[in-house]
Length: 325
Ligand SMILES: [Zn+2]
Image (cartoon, rainbow, N blue to C red; front, side, top):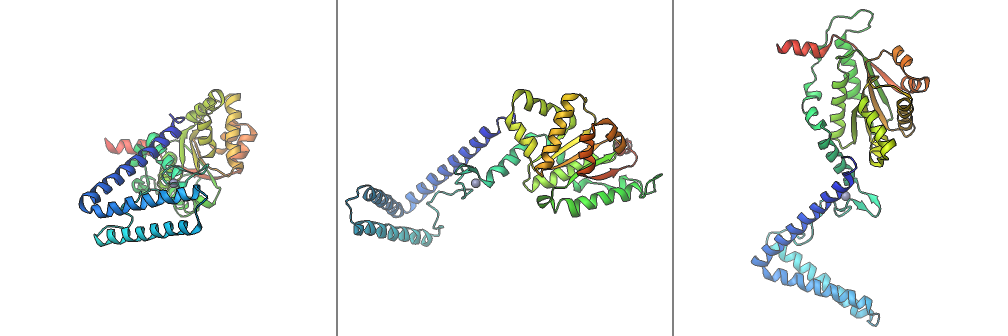
């Protein structure tokens, strides 16, 4: 499905151009029926523009004829604008309307992708990634801090509620506002059901809504994608995994670890760190278990290049289910 995005985007641009061509035809037909004299003027402009092109091609024309035609066109255009405005229309009414004037709805400026290309890709990816449904429920609006106990846990400095509040405050006041200009990676660690995935979703929604390309995958899905890239040469998927603005890897440690997985996982994490492309990784492991489970080169990246955020509480999912009964 990911391979098809380029084609799908090109057909979206084609559709926009078709729609705008159609809109222009309708506007012309409307003016033609109400004020045919304006359309006559428009035809006159086109005729003169053609004349101008020909006079450039036929080099035997004097500069005077060239300037005369140019002046005529300018006069006709001014007259057309005046007439349109007089009848209560915008002076641009009979021009092609581009939704992106930078690339004229082609997605490209020369060979460079236009800004609108990326925002379309984000929307397309968002729509296809099942995230849209999930994020309708899992977002900061529905974040309930009261699910976390306010009494202090054994051996912890803060109560689960205060700890979670600190984590959320950091995300809202620091991580999100500085996202574009920082290269901070986050490692969420703690037992299952303590809000790691929910907070990742909240972050994904905030950043997707601002037009960032966020890819969310469980560690199993990451491994599947890495296999696709390696064995089926899926370059589009490769670009997505290595270059998206934020890669969220949920539940690291649940994947089957072998040599291939260890190598590819290291390459992915390491390359993204070198390219300053941000990641949020969550794991149910403790930090010492993480260090034991992975090779030194993976764990040193995780512990050295990620800001560590600890999660603890009773299992929130069990609590929510119990409260529904
Ligand atoms: Zn554009």
